[in-house]
Image 1 (cartoon, rainbow, N blue to C red):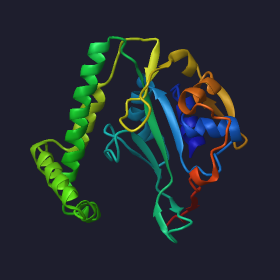
Image 2 (image 1 turned 60 degrees about the vertical axis):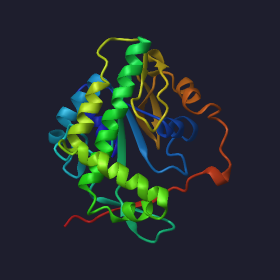
Image 3 (image 1 turned 90 degrees about the vertical axis):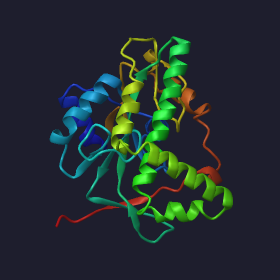
Image 4 (image 1 turned 45 degrees about the vertical axis):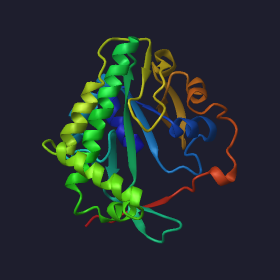
Length: 263
C-alpha cells in the first residue's frame, strides 16, 4: 500500500516522505516498529493539495481516500487512505474490526508573525469545534455507543447535551464543509524557514524546513522509501532519545491484517 502511494507520487512529481513512527521504524528497525500498526506520510502543503486533486482517479480502486477534499469526505481532520480489501485482526478481540490504512498529513509553512499565528489557531479551534459537534448532531441517532458512554455519569450527560446543542447551532453546514473551511484557514502561502503539522492531536511545534526537505532515501522492509532530509534530527525532535527502546509495558501490540478475496 505504501509503495503504491509512493509510486503514484513519483509518477506525478509529488513530494512525500514517511513521518512519525514510520520514520522511527525505517531508521531503527529498517521496517515496521514491531509493536506499531500504521504508516504515516507527510507532504508539503502544495504537494498535499495536488495529491488530493489526482488521487481518486489515479490510485487503484480498492484504495479509498477520505478527506475534506475528496468525494468520500473525511473520516478525521487529516487524510486517511483505506485499503478496502483488507481487515485488521485484533489479537485480543477475536475478530476483524477495521481496515488497513495510511494517514497523510500536510506540512504547513510556520507563520513567523506571532499574533497572526495565535489568532489563526484560535479561529481554527472554533472551526474544529464546529465540525466535531456538527458531526455529533448528525450522528446522534447512529452513534449510540458514544451516547451510552457519555451518559454513564452526570457530568458526562451534561457535556453530551452541551455538545449536542452546540452541534445543532453549527449544523447549517456539513462536517465535511466545516473541516474543509478549517483546513484552508490554516494554509500559509508565505515561504518560511520552518514547517509544522496542523493538528490538535500531535506535536505542532515548528521544525526547520531543511530538516524535512529535500527528501532522503532509506530502507523499509527491504524497499527504498522517502524520509525527511535529516531523519535522525527529525526523530530527536519528535521523540527525544529515539534510540532507546521503550519498556515492554508501553509498547502497543502490533495488529495483524489479512487480504480479502475479491468477490
